[in-house]
Amino acid sequence: MAKIYDFESRTFDEYLLVPNYADKECSSENVSLRTPIVRYKKGEESPVNINIPLTSAVMQAVSDDTLAIALARQGGLSFIYSSQSIESQVEMIRKVKRFKSGLVVSDSNLTPQDTLEEILELKEKTGHSTVAITEDGSSNGKLLGLVTSRDYRVSRLDPNTPISEFMTPREKLVTAEEGISLSEANDIIWDNKLNQLPVLTKDGNLVGMVFRKDYREHKENPLELTDANKSLMVGAGINTRDYKERVPALVEAGADVLVIDSSNGFTEWQYETLRWVKEHYDGKVYCGAGNVVDEEGFRFLADAGADFIKVGIGGGSICITREQKGIGMGQATAVQIVSEARDKYLEETGEYIPLCSDGGIVYDNHMALALAMGSDFVMLGRYFARFDESPTRRMLYNGTYVKEYWGEGSNRARNWQRYDAVGKSGGMVFEEGVDSYVPYAGSLSVNVEQTTAKIKATMVACGSRTISEFQDKARLVRVSSASITEGGAHDVIRKNTEATRA
Ligand code: RVP
Image (cartoon, rainbow, N blue to C red):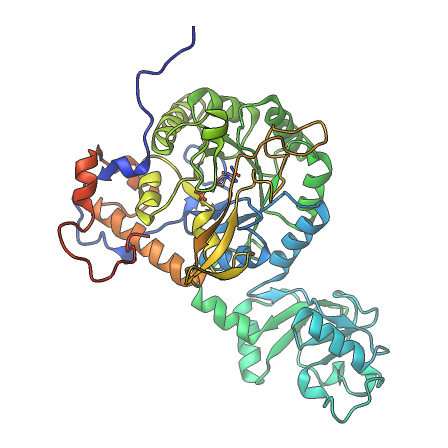
């Protein structure tokens, strides 16, 4: 007979946190939101951490290179969507890795024999006005000169003029040698009134550039998430079908963490994919898996070697899996059950597996609740889709600005690899996601700053300075529907009808 659980599954809105004692030292300035994202042994540190517990969903309407750069600069991590060709996903990863606040691999390079016309074309393509002139026109060739917009006047110079005639030659350039620190490079930039400093190997080959502007911006983004080479960090989605080709290409491009993107992770497909990644790379490539909602699903992926596990089925704002297939679990309950399973696994094996609460987060307080209930980080689709940096169009709809947002299981995404509803023709037989609009909300950095300030304030109210302390100390209470009404503004005539909770 079917097993029927004797509890109801619940959503975040049905819980509140109860404050704990907070001493004077427990203030927002002293709260760290740094959090582990891949498995580690008890007593050790996770090899990969993020500086704020926010990741962006593996979705076409959310995570491209532009959003990934903006989010990494605030300390979070994007997972670039996999419902695209391997080549275009790789290109997005490369763009994020190339964007460096410190040393930038030059993406605009020509030879001295090229012409002004080619400089102008390149500038148009990359949007960058500094071009490295190398012997072979590559980003790591012998540096022969530099061209910036100060070196030519388009109105005075024949477009066919060879670059050698107007570039600033190598001997007139101030350069630095490989190994220089970012702050030393910055001193040279200031002392010599430069806008950029080429960094060269001992043999004079170009390693990259340090830009004055980037250094300043880095100082303004103290939480910026970078790897050992000072490149921004970025994740990538993979699927269980073409992983043998996709994973090597993504790893080669520099993806820092992978995740198997699927609505249901409790499958032999995920097991095989995880084993392949782990064995092929000797455990050196990190890969998350999911999604699951119970202990059995968690154990299965943990034993298969998942580095983190995503929790949640059917809670996504654009997701109709529960309606279509009748599967899923209320998100808050799923997080609680899987967290308990994770803690049991830690007791038994001494390995901590970070959890990601994925889908169904509407308000900032839901993020705090997800963390309190045991998630180490959250994954957000709708939240990020609303910002300038998301890949979709901003439009005027019924008098307000909106952005488009569609599910990976919608016909629009045609991401049949994420779902099992594949027909004979290879298309989708039914949809598990909808195509929608979400209210436009401006820039990512402003919103993320506000969200993280709220999470910190919640943690302070619960007497916690770190996420793990928050998880240990949190005390939660279920609320009745009447007390939910009591929790919002009530029995007053609101002057401003805009929702203020988001
Ligand atoms: P939300 O943040 O509530 O918009 O949810 C985003 C999550 O929804 C994704 O990370 C993914 O797990 C899920 N999703 C994406 N597409 C679909 C679908 O089409 N059903 N669901």
